[in-house]
Length: 169
Image 1 (cartoon, rainbow, N blue to C red):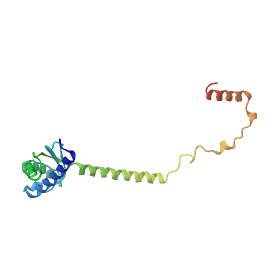
Image 2: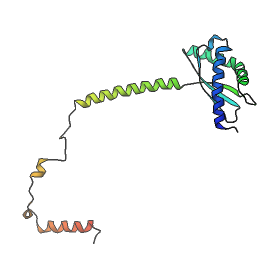
Image 3: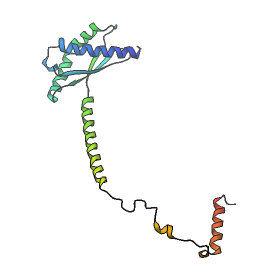
Image 4: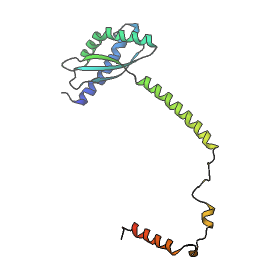
């Protein structure tokens, strides 16, 4: 097992080598719109996954896949010449979906922002369904409680409730 830091450095070097080789060594016009975005190497340094994006439509993407598969041997040879490891790692090319996912996420955020603006516009002209503070009322403040209104039985009941709340003494 190699050091993960060494694997990360090797992945960056492979990314640069493959990108340069696509521009210099591969003469296939189908690789013109390919951009190498990232590379990952396993900790044993035997396998490298190279991520790429393609500028263009689905036809350009499918052409790029075929071109990369055809040029895989030449690209691996180029990687073997430019890195210092005992065994040249195998190359696997994977389409990078981060730009697609990012554009979808931006669209979702744009929609959410628009809906938030609509809700804020509706809330600006809204009024409370009832009073602003429903727990405060003038009727409760105007009531005067006299001791004459209570019977002795009511007072005894309240005293019993206090005893029960204190632990049932």
